[in-house]
Image 1 (cartoon, one colour):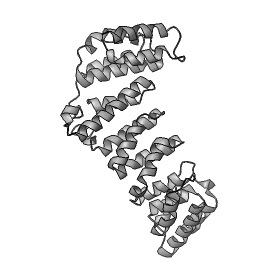
Image 2 (tube, rainbow, N blue to C red; image 1 turned 135 degrees about the vertical axis):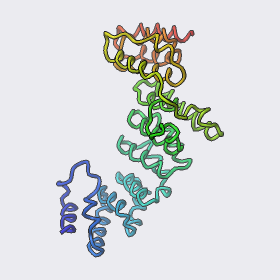
Image 3 (cartoon, rainbow, N blue to C red; image 1 turned 30 degrees about the vertical axis):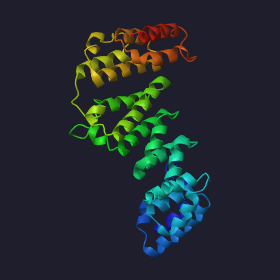
Image 4 (cartoon, rainbow, N blue to C red; image 1 turned 90 degrees about the vertical axis):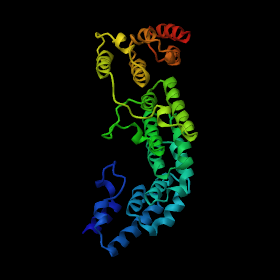
Length: 314
């Protein structure tokens, strides 16, 4: 009965959701040996024709008899070749196509294809993954950039460094602020986040400690200040708590200023003045970029330009 249902799916996958990347793995896992062989043979047949569901199903089933077909497809340039490379990662053979997966992560034509490759790179690790993930930090899509940061942190073994004793990240380290920068749609902020992460990689390779790099977890402080900041950010009638913000230091100050400058993505007209008061000189390139952008509201451009000049001279 299970085999019949699976073969029916292969013949007519319309019952599957567009989000289903494989045929029914639960049914496939229950097949006796002889029926499994029949199903795998049919999957291989369809994999040769570029059926991406069949390719990934073979990977999840770890059907060794399909390795020859998957290897050939993974080394090719067909539209389904990236999926074949993902299947090899499931086999634990991602290192065989590490260069191709790295290329997918950086140059893949589709966002989801780049994301899939980025998620596979930590399973491969090594220098190829490190280089590709650093390049992916400048992807045009913010979702891809953030996932590249996550994957890079995993490859570098930093996740436990930036978690509290309960295993939760709390945005208390400089490296986490870089993630907030990378999530921005302002190119100058993305550049800071990506260059900051590259510097972390370089200094780690040179033997710097977590404390020296600002990637060691510390208790969260000034929560009341950040609560007041969040309220001011989203309530135009509530003034920014400038005096409280001025007392912040280190990663907390950097995070607060990053949160404020990113409000320019919503054209918060209060931001330029606040950044001047806080003497946030590092934000000047972002203000200059937006002042020159045709997408910026016309009445906000001169204010941004004035603030950028003022901060650039401090």
